[in-house]
Image (cartoon, rainbow, N blue to C red):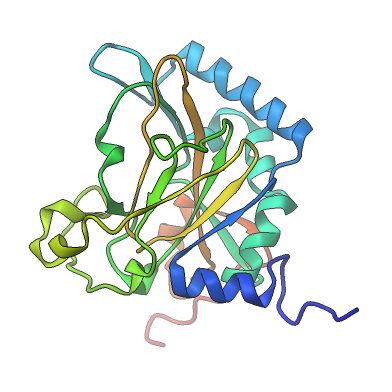
Length: 247
């Protein structure tokens, strides 16, 4: 039996697919017993509705933000091998969890801006890997996340909009707006997304809610000054030297 030539739990073929397509679905990434626990914790947070949270036009809580600070066991879950071992294959041995990007749970009850195709980051030089953990089946085209494969290689416009880029706001992308494909998932699956790949959240309804947890990770950045580390939590490896002020 040949050993895996790359670190982490992804195969070379899976890494190749992620690099070229900009996404990768990992089936049953969350063990069943942890999935039940996550559902209970997230449902309790939605019922409490404590800020920071987002409400729909009808007043329903549809997003709970800053998950990592709400329950220390949640951060342990976000730093656990089922997630971090996947990321090591893409980000290397030193990995930061980002508190200020994603770090939220959403429930699909009605159409929102998240159903628009978008990128999660502005430019390639400080890219991230977005991680979506599915608490419900999203096996139908209506509820599944949509992705434009390979779109992480498209031109970067660099126009700030909530930290990312809305595809429909830039004419340069207009001839690709209808090229998205649905990525069906089951409860417990994990979807890895290049921060620059264009994607959109699926739709759901009150009869068939769509609960997902969305997280963001990046490689440890040795160039960041001390003051910018407060939004990052080291979840694997070590904090690298940041060098001198004139290095």
